[in-house]
Image 1 (cartoon, rainbow, N blue to C red):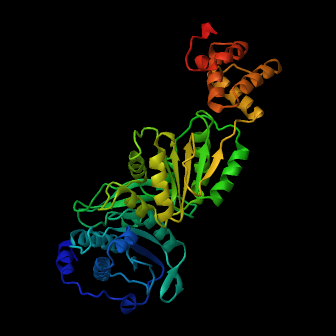
Image 2 (image 1 turned 45 degrees about the vertical axis):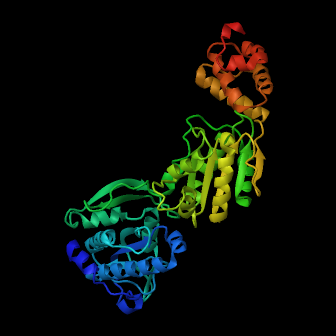
Image 3 (image 1 turned 45 degrees about the horizontal axis):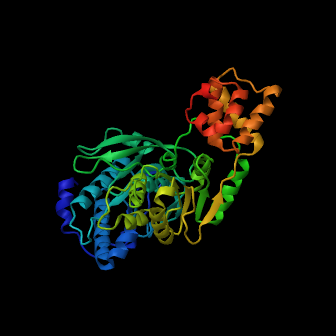
Length: 448
């Protein structure tokens, strides 16, 4: 059935929708292709207008049922949840064609809701495992569901397995765009992912919601992370028990480095991922929510306030949101954190600031200085990077220890002092620390 035919037929689709048990047929076995769909942001749409959303969802189910049947697909009885469906096809090309036609019809539909329904879809091919004669189980359908979770509304993702099977048997004007290799939640083997494209559908979407992309927002640090084993363990415990943890301390104490190490450690354990928001460029409190929107990939508010839109996006997802450098926009951080923590029960916020946010339920964690042995190790590593022939001898060990002690074990100060070994002896660095701010921020070495 052509897309144009489907569009015309769509205007005559019956309401109410066919229920899954009415279309029950013997489920195909062996190697099959699964098509899974889901309405993006349906929770917020239901809250915005239940009557309009009920009519829209009924219409959406009718469209999907008609298209799946037209392409020879079968819908397992009552398999799928909420506003989603599961369909299975004996040929991968039929599954891909059905996904494309579903999106083409949905894109031209006149919806009763304030914003169009946006449906995300995924197609994957694998061995069918039957739970019983009416439902599927097993790795193939789970992998399809994980692939769907990466997608955005209006987007169709296709696994590499399906892409290989389909080959050049794509619908007219359709193409597959390679989106790279991504790791899927709770599945160890990464998967190459493709996006199904067509001239009449949107092509540009935010980054996929994979574990890799979420972790990719955490700043990349090229130098080693020295010490802090005790703090990392403490941080893990705090983030398991509290939903708002603020790392507090003066500039240079290592708040950002510690937060990034915690975020990378926790990334794989969180199904919704980790999002890192650097607030340093924000000039005013109102810029906080704009920064959060940009990082999580929201480009439109759909008639809601920016804060409401972010809450909708994160609701129901187990996410760690890291907000770094909060001290100059504390009011904005308080407003955003208060709303998101209330609206998103699975959300945890890790903040870094020179002072607490001041919210009820906030766990304030003052970042301690480096332990003496870790400070010496940090100095040695950074000094070796600055001057490769640098060696910490027994003769010099006491001087380095004194440098680190005079700098109160502040990591940034230790690193800046270590960088001076290119021009100064250890004894001169130690002697100059009485005027350490002049020395470490670019004062003339000869003046020491």
